[in-house]
Amino acid sequence: MPNFRCQINGTLGGSLPWSTALHVSGAIAEGTLSTDFTTATTNLWTTETDGLQNFMSADVVVTGTLVTTLNATMHQTTGTEATLDIAGTDDNASLPWNISEVVTLRSPQRTKWGHGRMFLPPFAEDQIVAHVIKSATCTAVAGVFDTFFAALVAAGTTPFIYNERPRKDGTPAYTVTNLTYFDFSNKPAQQRRRVSKIVPGRTLGTF
Image (cartoon, rainbow, N blue to C red):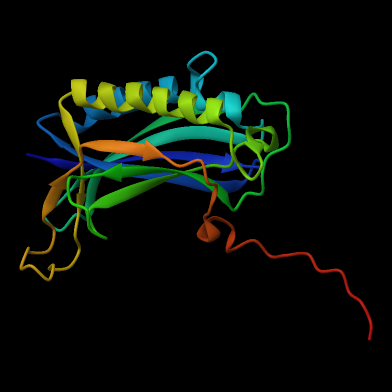
């Protein structure tokens, strides 16, 4: 059964790129999956009231999707891109660009390798109360992700994670472990790689 990498791409502040991705398997053509994944992503962002764009400022934009077919060692081979243009609609300022909200994708394995993560772009400042994401926002996000994953499953795919090296229990490298549920954390996280190439401005002082 073919394996795929499904990626959502976007920009912060008009130029800084961000992306998040997951892996799925399924007896489906790459082009068909691209269409289904793009539709699911659009709905994930634009669903009235609960879509992710409601919780992000206008400088957070989704610019498209990329679905690639993977070989036996999980390297990308062919790919299908689709263009989107979906900006956030929250009127408040964005949290710093290195801040990310995290969706953890879980398998039945309660181990360090038994889960994956999707790092989302930053929410707007008003979505944080007492240092955590508002309860109502968490409920809304979990709801639209329920619909997002249900759409991918209905398209004939199964989300999965894989191990790049052999495990201590003898499991070979590149073994697929299917994912069965997710959770959304109310604790904002850091995504330092997103901003690592930004050259900081510095204000000088004297001794």
